[in-house]
Length: 182
Image (tube, rainbow, N blue to C red; front, side):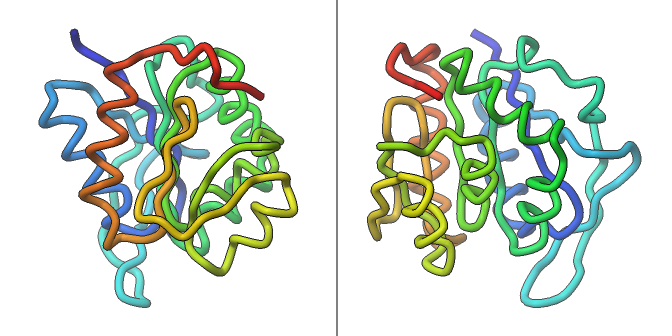
């Protein structure tokens, strides 16, 4: 069955953490839309420098969670910090949890989950520098390449992308997760 996946990102996303999951999702025959704050392109970050630009498929204020089967949140230091400042982005993320849909976040990507207030009691991982933020939001953080908690998939860094991509697709194939929660 064809799936539609939203990838929420803005300038400063870690390039591999968007490009690899997007390609893996598309290999499944699924659609993976880049959803962002503004139309046009967003610029990636790679090896400590600005890198390639990616086309935005859907502007956030026109995006509707009901049109998607799952959400992917790439990291990068800049990207999640910019997104979590935008109420519309936080609400978009939260809506996937309210609808019990799979959410996959890697590296610094889980930071926006703090603002969406969806981490209480959840098992997660992330880039080590944000673990205390996640723990302070009520998450149970562990240092593992991939952690799955009722439809929520998290990983630490680009080295974990193979495991992250595999688990992300597995959770999306399972569909609605009744125990996914806000």
